[in-house]
Image (cartoon, rainbow, N blue to C red; front, side):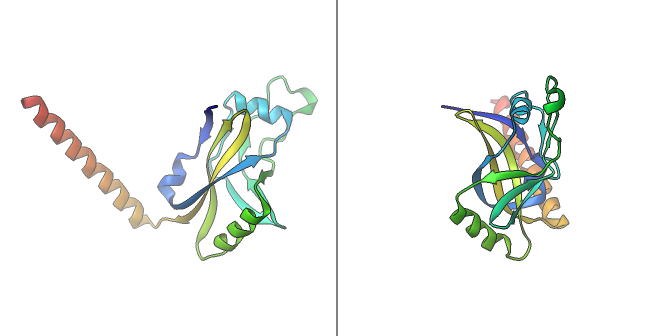
Length: 153
C-alpha cells in the first residue's frame, strides 16, 4: 500500500553521517497509536540502544491522546523496537564500534503498522557541519546563477 510519515528527525541528518538505515517495528499501546495517527510525536533527542538482546527506543515523545482518560500512556516512556534477533545482534556489533550511534530518522505507518527508520550514524564534527552548510550555499548560488542566465534567453 503506502507510507504515511508521522514525524521526522530533521536534525539527525545535520548532526550525523548516516552510514546505514534499517526499518524496525514499534511496540505501542492503543492510545499511542491513536496519537501517532494524529501526528502528535517528536523524535528530537531520541536514540536507540541494544540491551539484553532487545532494541529499545529512548526519549521519543508521543503526546497523550485527548480522549485517553485513565488509560493514557506516559509520553516519554522507553519503547521496544521490533527486529529479528540476528539483525539486532548485527546492529549491536556495529554500534559498539567507536563513535557509532543508533538514531531514529522518522516514524511512519506502512500498511497500517507503525515503523521507525533507524540509522547507524557517526557524529559530525563542527567543521563537517560548516562544510555541509558551505556546500549547500554554493549549490544554491550556482542554481540561482543558472536560473538567471536562462531568463536572459
